[in-house]
Image (cartoon, rainbow, N blue to C red):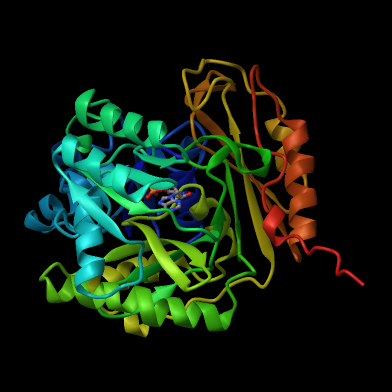
Length: 427
Ligand code: AMP
Ligand code: GLY
């Protein structure tokens, strides 16, 4: 099969790496890809959102399957366009992608179908939003309706923070139309987990539960980022909890979408808060998580191609996934200044030494090949991955590997996976 992966981050490197091991893959392309992906796939210089050009390319190269990484391409309708042209593609339609591209749509769907989530109200008028926030009080959560690259949610601790967030989104329009409408939501308390499933609209196959680390600094301090690291499996999600999530959240969501004539194919990602009243949905994503994919895919023993392929065919019920019983931790190495303004073009040292360590993988996120070296080319630069029989072993490996790598301004969290580490039992 000739396969095209769309996107340029660590998630796409992990997908390309996994696909490159499939005996059924004859040729791999990635558009636009990054420095590291270029070692495994032919890079095509077309942006992920240039969906027309991607369709032209797929047609001209007889691509058998296209796999979409980022939500921006899905929200632009890449799946609808490919399907119209008779091209096979893994991912939801533009209308189904609204589960991620409109938080108001997602919240209304959950309310209609009684899927557990926080109480909320939706506003187009800043005046009404302010009155509601004053009435409810803090803490409270303000969310832009549209896609903001993970930066459109503000968990406000004070009234002035909440009112300021409404101003920034609705009056100053810092995220343009994405903030024209907002969701004001009850603040939920608990531990967060990511449950990703692959679904063809009827059957859902869960991937290993994982946890992301969204804040920049250790102990969940500092600003929100795209994600500073992830690990899988998350031991807090035992078989009973996973069953509860599948029965009360995942399957009802898939059935709800089908009832709305928006049959969902692809990856459905539920970001959950494990509250004292049970798991509740914080958000849906309609694609593999980044950095979750970098911690999940290395533990997948089965070939990934058949599961993607059977999803497109609507035959997912025939697929079983086999997983490694070990643990995987992925640590993001970011540029100095990220998630604010950051510098690029810094030489990356120590990659070869990291590769030589046992149980270590390195997925590139923002890098570029520059003659015989790599330079940083984005906010999140690399994902260092450690695999082991236990969380302790994968953590030891990932941080040993991280210590061999350096570039000017490099920053990373030293506590990825801390929630999974067994705490000493009090006697
Ligand atoms: P979202 O943009 O919905 O993905 O939210 C980003 C992050 O904000 C989540 O990962 C949570 O850490 C936090 N968050 C979102 N909604 C809530 C909520 N209702 N209560 C508490 N924290 C939230
Ligand atoms: N890890 C969060 C996301 O992929 O949006």
